[in-house]
Amino acid sequence: MPLICIKSLPFEDEVDVPGMIKSITEDFAHGTEVSIEHITVTWEYISARHYSVAGLMPATQPQSDSHPILVELHAPSFHNQSSVETMMQCIAFSVSKRSGVSYGNIFINYHKVSSGHIFDRGDVVHWK
Image 1 (cartoon, rainbow, N blue to C red):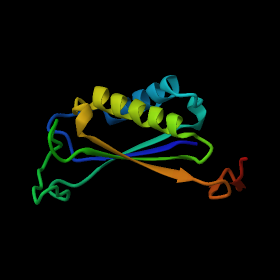
Image 2: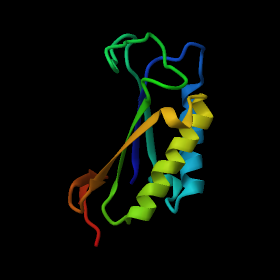
Image 3: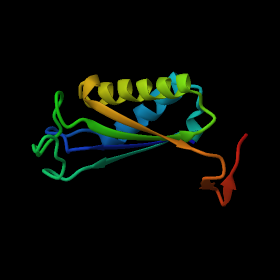
């Protein structure tokens, strides 16, 4: 079920966002114990000058030092701390590799999703 929601400013040069999403999905499946059919990845652009860090609002995504790519990872609560850390590191490595943005300029926020808090495929999902 991991849902990986990525947001960034537009890139200065043209990028293949669908290709990046596909590669990030594959990298995540290979780097974790999650089957590819359970992984969802989205990528949205934040409008130019609609993202402020320290009062600065650039038009394009900086490669390093400021305005990190923002990632929200939503994953089931049955993952232990070590697994969550592995997932976050895998995402950071893949996003950095695929986007050209520094590994240190990626911010990931993990959201633990409890059993019974997901509606998918017409039903509320429960796990132990």
